[in-house]
Image (cartoon, rainbow, N blue to C red; front, side, top):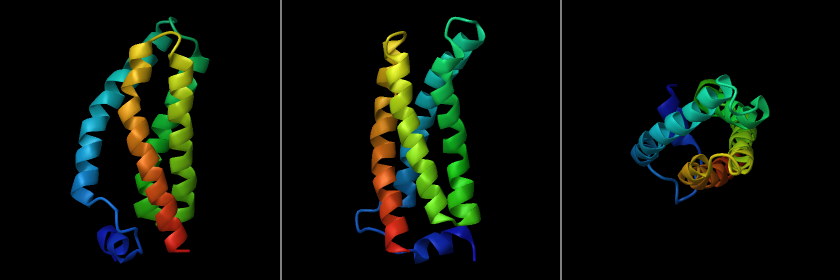
Length: 131
């Protein structure tokens, strides 16, 4: 069974966004993430930011990238729920550590934080409904 058939067979909340809406949201967020995270990593490599400031951004990036393979490749809802919680926590952590140095980077994370908060509730709901 392909991933879309599998996903469509899952019990989901009535308020679940359509795949096209989810795709649109990510098409808006990814450029923001690329610019702001890229800035943090460049500043870190230049020695203008300590590695401890870049750490939550790095963990977030890895966690974000592995969500889809976990959710749709492994089809492991529980592990995907843990992963998205890591994504959510590292966004908050990133905002806290970057705020004193580059407030624009922190503010740029707000749309990402809002979406991942919604996506986390959705993922936890789907996991619960399909236990």
